[in-house]
Image (cartoon, rainbow, N blue to C red):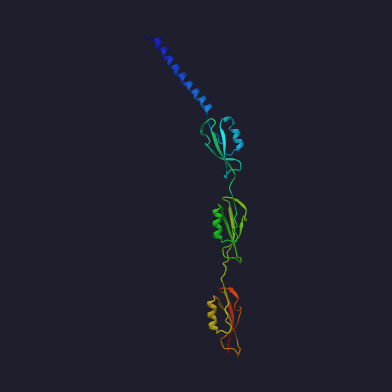
Length: 238
């Protein structure tokens, strides 16, 4: 075979191969640009801004509704497909618009036992911060006030503080009637009523038996805190 013919045949084949390669590349690039698109990041855009952004991308936007999120109200906080995904033209890009952060209302916790109030606050997503205490004529551990106050709107994760009663409510008992009772028996009756004998004063009355209680510092029948000291006056004949 003529060497020149072989050479020209080789050159022709190579040229056709190169032309075919570049033609395919041009076609692929053209086809890709016209058919496939990279999804932009729409997060933090408003719905109107996102629609404007997609105008030249041959992509459509589909609002899937509003939900609570950390982003401000009206901003897109989630999308599907995700940013930088490759999709065909006219693809619907689903988006979810933020309703802002979820708010919780401080419930009525005043008057509750602190442990119960704490549990309710935490269930609502609030964080218990400071717990101050004071002494009040209320049941032990009762919530006196909260900060913020009842009905205040808070974001989940915000803090709430409590003021509670730290004074244990003392049990009350009834003062027994020990007038005319022997002092030893009177001490027993006081002890059975969770009361203590305080000062014992003595007087002499001839007409009353020796060792009998004739007066008490607290009248019988009155309710007093358990552990109260009761002063008594006892008749003592010399």
